[in-house]
Length: 578
Image (cartoon, rainbow, N blue to C red; front, top):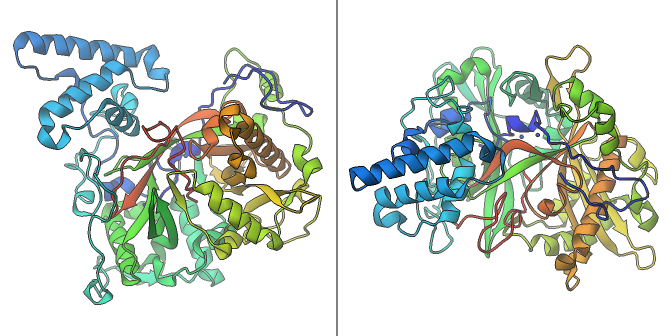
């Protein structure tokens, strides 16, 4: 259910034609201007969803019905003009043209009846972005082409307690179906084809962890060109799947009965998440993977139902998950951005390209980073165990600024920020060299006079196998994780730009540390406060969109890549999915 996007794997980055960040310059002081989780999952999420992007038809727009022949002709002409705009310059912009939004809104209201009478242009615009309608209209999603599936709609998801596409926003937040006592939950596992059997994976056993690593490495998300495929390390999986209070029974595998070979997997881990004013005890569902040769067995829906059953047995009836495909129904959508670090390698493996108006040498200069972290002089150092109470306090307060965010106690903070540090020496110069098995980097800024932690910033490692390069076999990608700063609570810090300036300092230092750790690129999403600094720090807009979903919970849309009436872009989502 929560699979990374193929668009994370390959960027179509826009490179800013501006001067580089100099070692002695502040990144916010210049006049800067400015390609993922789940866009076409190779684990066959469409099998579970019932349909993928591209199952719609352009005739919906081209043949908008009118009340009379003359009106119909006018509307059709208007739609054709909008479509033409999409196919030309407007298609390359960040927003859907107003004409298209109005056409769709008129049709929704005309055909939806009272249930959608309250629909507005903002809701339609968000839905169109989530559906990647521009790609559909331009033929990229394959309307009538090779990517189209005649599946008859979202058959699986129409049976699940999730908001259905087209539903009006809820009047109040809350569960869709009530929780049940344990004795009323299905006690027997869901049936599998006779040649397969269920198996709980013990991540603490090196042999079973290795099996999972091998399954994901060979069968998990890859891009459409079969150029890149995610390579979750054993250390990463151990870190991601064993947070405090995890259940072995939530690491659900499918094996071939005769050979005991692991051929499918899905996981869930416990999480407390605040959705607006509600504290929800939920599971974070991830790593749904089916062996490539078994995609026709329709194992994905059964895996989802079985992990849901296991969660229900522990009294958990809500879940958080992500996907790049649109299924019923996203609570928010965020866009991927990519900050190039190792330009020659990224160009060589076709992760990005040199723009026609630029040379590679100039592209390298524009992306040059300082030689060392700027905040070292102001107390920047690697996070330690003794920092956990202060970081927990700052994390709690900082994340309250966003519409949906995890709720972590000290044990959670210690696990998320420290348990994946790897093995090796720690000290003032540890930022220069990664440790063996390190998957997460977390740094704090400590006031040397008061010993107060004023800031923290983190990122994690998720490499990809490069399958078609004679010189390189691994793309080292860093992903921006959580950060926070006390400056956010100073009066006027955000409107004055002081918060943005401080965040840029933190992220630039994270980029410098990532460069020394031999990362090739850093990826980030339009969530939290990221929107304020992504373009100025030369993160190029990618073509990947990550949709966030809540299972068995209704709430109004949250601000992700687009603003809502209550929040600016990004501020609705404070959850980073691994």
